[in-house]
Image (cartoon, rainbow, N blue to C red; front, side):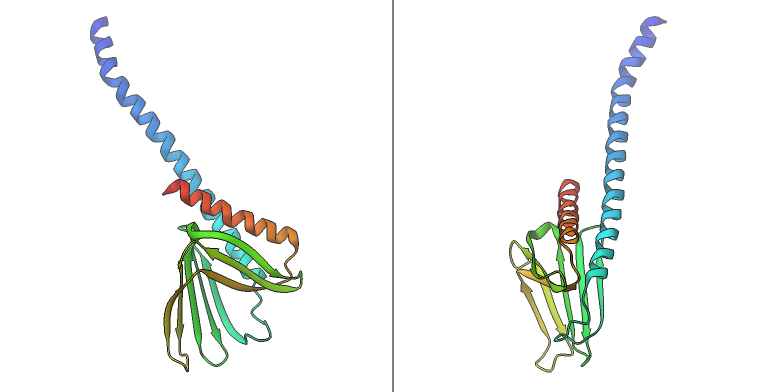
Length: 166
């Protein structure tokens, strides 16, 4: 009877070990996905709060800025004259994040490795455009140094988590 138990345990042991590793992996992935989701929400809220839609020369009627759990940042702005611009890129492609301006107003500039930013225009008098760019610029207002550091860190942390999950 003891040898039968021992034999059964030998057959069961690899299954238990595999199940244990699978549970550890799933719980770690779930934790990372939840962390990524919370980070995306927080960063999207920061970007929407800091965005300066009333920038004098832009004359933006409305805008939409979304950041999802897969790391895609999508930004659409509609001008008073009806022209729309749409930008989209994945945070995995970020090569540099800079701020051009002072603490009252400026532009958040995000560079990518290659032509990774999708740029589309609609209702443009000069014709609609589909192109690619190497950077994305977002007009922002009242950006203190600690806000910029926090935003920079959050974007890079999202990039790190996305890289780990791929």
